[in-house]
Image (cartoon, rainbow, N blue to C red; front, side, top):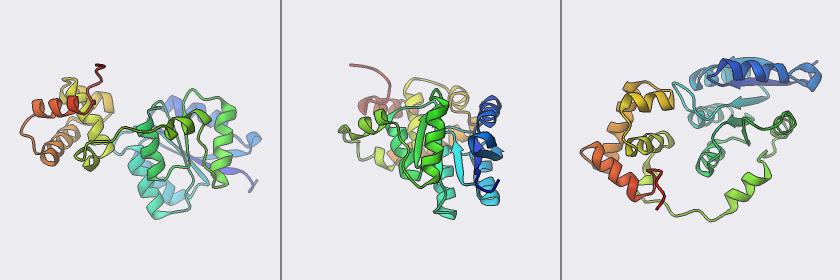
Amino acid sequence: MSDLIRILIADDHFVVRQGLSTLLVPRNGMEVVGEASNGREAVEMARALRPDVILIDMMMPEMDGPEAIALIKAENPKARIVVLTSFGENDKIVTAVQAGALGYLLKDSSPDDLFHAIHSAHQGKMALPQEMLLALMQPQPAASPALTNLTEREIDVLKLVAKGQSNREIGDKLAISTTTVRTHVSSLLGKLGFANRTQLALFAAENGLDGRKY
């Protein structure tokens, strides 16, 4: 049975982990060796279990997928990681790939697509659906220099601040604590040189991060 692909699943939703576990079974050439419910657990379990492939969500409590991916890759450059998420925006795909992911799939993908991504990653090959590859090849608008200094999570918080959401609402949306939200808001104010949330919202609008269409 040593030829089975050993897989670690990292997702904060139990039903997702359970569903994946029913698919990733020996008859399909795979076995689940561990399940993590947040990014920090994913890093710890990747270190302890050394799985062949890691399936990881993009947005999780305690530590985001990209941050966890970067830490896992720093400890084990040979780690094979596939993102399985509900977020299909180009910027998130780019962030995941830059962090070290070999594959990126949406959660509504077919089992065959999932199996293909796992096998490709196991062989060290990129596993991005054709439509994602085509989208990433399209010219991207230049970002404000200030935006390049922000983390992916800070940008997520900034987008929600621009929509007028409270710290509690932002925390619920991103599955993080209000304390963590306050920390991100403080970091945004410091990095951008602003004094309040109104200025953050105006900056977000000027850079097209408020979700409005003009």
